[in-house]
Amino acid sequence: MNLKKVLLTIIVILFCLFFSTNFTYAYDTNSFTGVVTQILKEDKNYQLLEVAIIKGEQKNELIYVKNGGYDIADYQEYKINDKLLISHSKDLNENDVYFISDYLRQDSLLTLFIIFIIVSIAITGVWGASSLIGMGFSFLIIFKILLPLIVKGYNPVLVAVGSSMLIIPVNFYLSHGFNKKTHVAIVGTIISLIITGFLAIIFISQSKLTGYSSEEAGFLFFEKSEINMIGILLAGIIIGTLGVLDDVTVSQSAIVFQLKSLDNKLKFKELYLKAMKIGKDHISSMTNTLVLVYAGASMPLLLLFINNPRPISEVINYELIAEEIIRTLIGSIGLILAIPITTIIAVYFAFKKN
Image 1 (cartoon, rainbow, N blue to C red):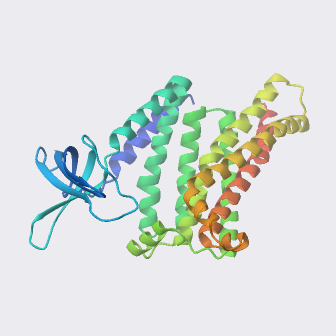
Image 2: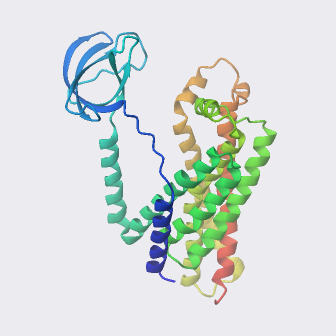
């Protein structure tokens, strides 16, 4: 089976999934896209803006929008030519009321995404293009299978594991080709992911985490009270770990087969030890990377706790902090275990003739 057949198969799968599922986007007819044409009045924490509607039911109309007027920490001062999202409602007297929802960020996001595509394809060629298809497939699985099934009340852990079993082979074969290296990486990833899932179940239970530590979880419970928030937490850990296991398992598998091809006289134990020597460096760098990623994502929260007068032993006991620590440690353990697991499997297949 060559790459063309794999690509053709994936395209067919994507086509079937895309057109067999009904899209249910909620289009808000009271939202518009506008651009600031004039600043009619400006004072401290207050602006009166003239905005031209460029998209929506009132396209090409001019409206007047008040910005601010009271002290808030996140007051935004808008300028001429700023593109904004405008919401519309009626007051008690049925008069039109317009207010600014946020900046329009679609243009910059699209530009950045195009740069990402160009760089990926320019550096990696056909594999970059195929990996982008794999990324699209992952988004499709997440938004059309994983999230809808969780919303319908299915077990989040089982849904996450099932979705991962769909994502892993498609992404791996598209990104790395249909070969022994990729076969081994897939097996190593699945085994490591299962171990990670069991660890998450055990320690989330032992730590008495509820899954309600964030505001988003609270809002979700308010909207969908039947959803198992602990299951959501577990599913998040599984999907998050999957995202970094790809790099670890594929790299380690490639190292084994490369070492074997360079020195065919290597014995089983020698090949394993040489590959693990490189793998240990990989473990150190990846674990450190994982910690820094979580720290960077939680920077405002960490800064908030720096000025907390309570001792660190009490601070880390808060669910919001404990949840991130458990997430980081379980993910790191999964990465560390993936190295020897993938290595031993790769060494075994490196010595098999067929």
